[in-house]
Length: 77
Image 1 (tube, one colour):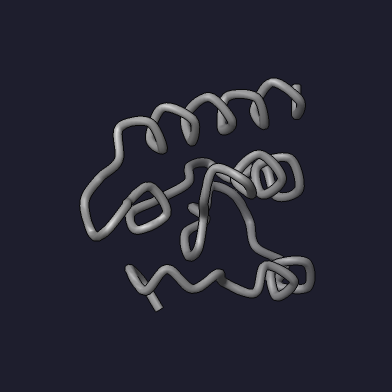
Image 2 (image 1 turned 90 degrees about the horizontal axis):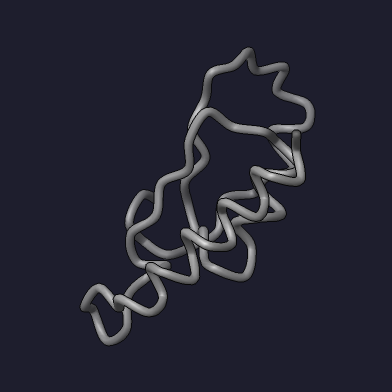
């Protein structure tokens, strides 16, 4: 699944009993990263294809992803 752009079924984490620290990856994009951070409070998030346009890294998508990730972090404090 890694690098496929498909979103991981985050519902599996609700019952997994994971201890921190852990990373979240799989289908993260600017429109869902804040929600993922707020819900799971991961140690880190990983993104690749979620910030690409036509197979190339998109600077504007990267900027928005980081901005929204920071927003998600600020809402967990």
